Structures are given as structure tokens and as C-alpha cells.
Length: 405
Image (tube, rainbow, N blue to C red):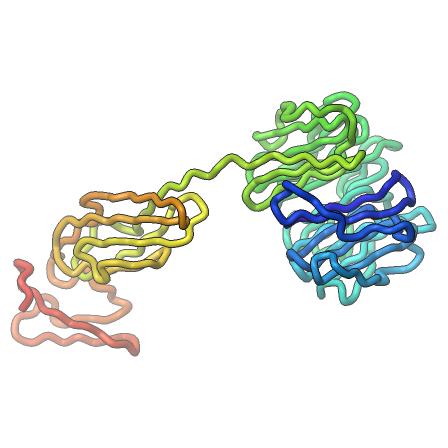
């Protein structure tokens, strides 16, 4: 499910919100009207709950997937809203341009029930981005970058570039950030904005930015051209040559890495994520153990998995449907472990032969001294076992040969 918003003309015109419920194959209009102010910003914190904002201090919220909208008052002296982003269902930040020609950031920590104005802002703002739950960045005129480390309540200017030039797009993921300039420069940082480098491309107005959680990012603007980096911004290549008919305003990616470009002339472009191969795999915290030692298994499979089915030769339990089970191996020997994963229509199995090697350890050296103690050790006629915690215990005595006494 997805939403997009805009307006008929560039300035102060009829607004529209459209919606898809099939991953972008088709779109329907959920809000439009001649009396509707133009919309500049949209953000949905869940499939049904979202906000739109635009010209003439227009701000509204829906909780039913766009069927109905309720107007809200965020602040005063607002001419129009510029951008809006969210961290989770409770934390949203919105950029506004005031009638006094200054800019302001309003934040909420209760899902929009109340809004507060940020302090410390001394710049025209074009775009805003969350880096983590408490760290945000804004960019704008004179290539200024400001940063907040307390959820947007207070801002500090951390960078200033060329006077008269604008940074018009920004995105961050933790300390890796990318900002786009109106004159074709791409600014990037890997230390949370303490230092910035730039990459010049020419004439593009880079407004749409998306930063991934690794070393990759996308940026786009004029003529629908999209640039991509996979090395923290040190080099950029053209990922997509656009038709030149539209300008990219936003670049968004879903959790499965399907990408969307949204821009002028009603343009929405989609890049389908490459299919994730269903592949079963796992690991264990240890593979050489003493008998009756517990082994913890971790699922490393890839794909959208619905169920897990484990088989542990010589294990207790012998089978498990948990994603990350824990198993005892009570007898010495070499044991196979297998895992089968299912998606409902597909399955994948991996078998690791002789994966667990269980041995009889001398005396009781394999026992966890923090759990219980045994005295004397080794013992012949009398054995004292002291539990250090309140727990139930299963005690079995073996001969040195491994025979259960």
C-alpha cells in the first residue's frame, strides 16, 4: 500500500492524494477538489494513518486510509508547508515557510495530537531527514545544514556553503548522509555532518535523495536522471537516464527494496526489487560439545519465510518449528542437522552432515560452575550436587565408557 500527493500547478493550486493497494500497479484518487489547497508534503505512519500539508497553512490527518480527512492546526503565521518526515507512529517533523519569509520546524511525539515549534533555526529550509530516532538534519539556503540531536526540539548549524546557493534535498541513515544542490553538486558525509565532501555533475537540481543503511544512496532531480553510489559517496554513476520531461521531487524505497520516483507532470516511476532467492541456511553457537551440553541454532536463511522445520539427529528435542531453537545432545557421536524452510509455495532444505560432534568429557569439566557444583570430582562412592539456582534438574550418571548407569 502506498500514497502520493501533489497539486495541479506548481503554486497554490488544487491538491490531490492518490493511493495504491497493489504495489503501484494501479492508483486511485482518494482526495481532490477545487477548494482543496495545494499539497506539498505527505507522510503515512501506518497503512491507514497519515498526514498531508500544503499551501495556505493547510494541514490534515486521516485514520481510515484517506477516506476522510480532518484539518489540524500545527502553528501560526504559516504560509505553506515544505516537507514532512516521520520516524515512527508517534514522531513526525514538518517544515513550514512562514509569512514572515522565515522557516520553522514543528514536531510531534504523540502522533499529531499536539505540535511544538523547534528552536535555534536561522535559515530558509528546503528539506528535512531523520538519521535515527533523535537525530535530524535540515538543509536550505546558502547551502546551510543544521542538526538536531534531541528529536528536533533544538537545532545547531553545522555547515554553510556558497552564499546564494540552495541545498534542496537531503537524506541520512545514521552517520551517512547525502544532500543535493540546485547547481548539480552532491554533498556527502560519513561522520554525521562533521565533514562534507562534494561530487559535481553539472546542471541538475538534486531534490530527491534516498540513503540506504550500508554504503549506498540514490539522488535525482532535473530530467529524471538518477545517480547512485555504492562506496559512501566517493563516486557516482548514472543509474537511470530519464526522459527529461519531469523533475524528481522524492525517491522512496519500500522494505523489500522496491524503489519509487515521484515528480512533476504526475510522474511516478518504479524499480522492482530483484527477487530474493529462497535459501535455507543456519549456524550453531558450537559444534564440538560434551554430551548433555545445549546447542543454540540460528537461522541464516534468505527469503520471505513462513515456517521452519528442523531435524536434529540424536537431539533432544529431535524436531523443532522454532526459527532459532536450542537442543541437547545426550549421547556421544556425530550427528546430522537439517533445516527446511517454506513460503507456502516454495521450500528449501539444507542438510549438514556430521555437524554436531558430541563427546564424553572427563569427570564433569563440561558442567557450568555458575549453575551447579559437584564434589568430590571425580567421585567414587558418594556424590554431592549443589544447585546454585532455584531450578529443576535431570541427573543421569554415566560410566567413563559412556554407558548409562
